Length: 323
Image (cartoon, rainbow, N blue to C red):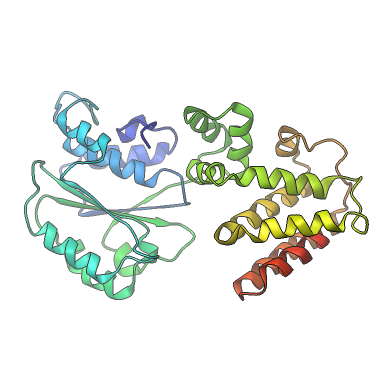
C-alpha cells in the first residue's frame, strides 16, 4: 500500500510489535526467523516490509529506515532484489515454491547485508513443503532472515513455530482503523462504518470497500429492519435480495459475518453502525430470544453453504428467518 509509511516504527498501531522488533534490532543478533501471527488485515505484511527496510537502510544515523536511501526507495517501489515474498499458490504454499526458495538463498544477497524472505499465510503451507523448509529455517545460510505470517485463527505446524520468534499481532481498534481508512481517501462516516464492520482490521475493511460489500449490507439490513415491510406482501422483494446475496459466491461467508455483527450489535444495544448508515430510525423491536434465533439461522446458513447446498435456497430461507 503506497499510502503506508515504510519503516515499521512509523506505522499506526501494534505498539507491542514495535517494541519487540526494536529490541531485536538493537540486540547483538537477529533470530533466524520471525512468525508474525494475528488476525487477517492488521498489518503483518507491512511490518515485514518495514522490518526489512530498517535492517537494510543505508543511512546509519537513522534508527529504523530513512525512507530516502536507494535500499528504502527500492523497497517502497516493490523492486528490491533482496526482498522476496512467497504467497500461497492456489490456496497453499507448495513444495516447488520452497525448493526454488532454498536454491535462491544458497547464493549471497545481491546488494544488502541481509536478504529478507517473507512467506505469507504459512497456515496454508502443505506438510511436505513445511518439512522441506525446516532445515533451512533452523540454519539458514548467513545473510538471510525469514519472516513468516499466519492467521491467528488457523493452526500453524509446531515444527515451524518452534524455529521462529513469535510476534503476536492484534486488531487495531475502531479509531485507528478509521484514521487509516481516511488516509486511503474514504469519508469519515464510511471509514467508521467499515472500521466497525471489519472489527478493527484495515485490510479487511479495504476489501469490504473494494467489493462494495457495505452497499449490499445497507440494502439488506435496511430491508430487514423496516417495520413497513411485510413478508407476505413483499415476498418478491425478499426473493430478489436473496438472489443478489447468492451471487456474492466467494464473498458470501464474509457477508454472513457482517449480518452476524448486525444482530450481535442489536443484542448489545450498540446502534452506532445503524445510525451512521441511516438505518437507526424505526428499527423493528426484536426480543433477545428472537435475536438469538436469528444468530442461529446465520450459523445454519453457513453450515449449509459448507455442505454445498443450493445458494439461492439457503439465502431465501435465511432472509425469511431474519426479517
